[in-house]
Image 1 (spheres, helix red, strand yellow):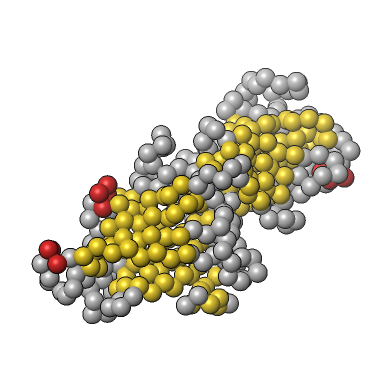
Image 2 (cartoon, helix red, strand yellow; image 1 turned 30 degrees about the vertical axis):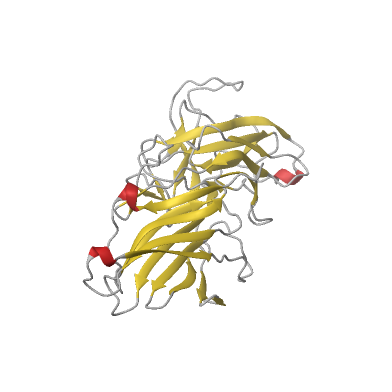
Length: 364
């Protein structure tokens, strides 16, 4: 099952002034968005489950139609113009997110909604969306660029090119509402979908070989960190990622010279790299540099350095093994060191769950 972040559109009666072509009175109703579930702190990096952090912000588009509530955009001949365009909604009181300054429901007609999260995606990205008669509505984010990954003591810390206090973007979008809404409609549902692929790397050793191997560097070779997302209504088509050029980069996930020594591998408590968020793309080659002792408690001068490489496997909606990472999937790659070789057993767990055993797909 896919896990989504569920939001609900709600209303909050507040008096405020706003610049608009629509005339309001003292009884105007403010447009607000309220998560069904929420958390007390912001979660930079991947967001798990259906809780939306109260310190996170998302951006909203809304298009006005002269048609009544419940009209479908694809057949709606009353669609006029944008009512909200890339407006940031922030958490305020009473568990409600709304614009700053406040925005109000129109006196006539109804609205279609669409949006993305977080609102603070990098400055180089441009966002637009289409809600027009005779078209399936869709959202476009051009020039999205993922932050670098930074590893410290088993946790992800500040990327070098980001002004934010933690880690990679967890880019999400919510589909346009299947019907239009007014302030009197109650609570229409809005569902966020994960647009990226999430992965972790777990490195352990065979029983009896504890304290013989230590990871010194991990690199993903030739990955794309910048791309363009076109996200159609998820019930009609999967989101599409495209790339403007062939530029790739080697993404260092861990480096002993930067992050300090990792611990010697254990059988049941190895070395983990968590929450790497990448644009869906062709899977990459991983390089794992490691130190190896010839026997337990061997002196440091007998330690040798080695390199292991492997092409990572991916998954698809058809539950087959392909060379692609798929959006909204959470991949776990397990590397087990033994006396003769390093074994690779890739698995995928929810967001959407697939499992690989010795390279073969297992249906759950």
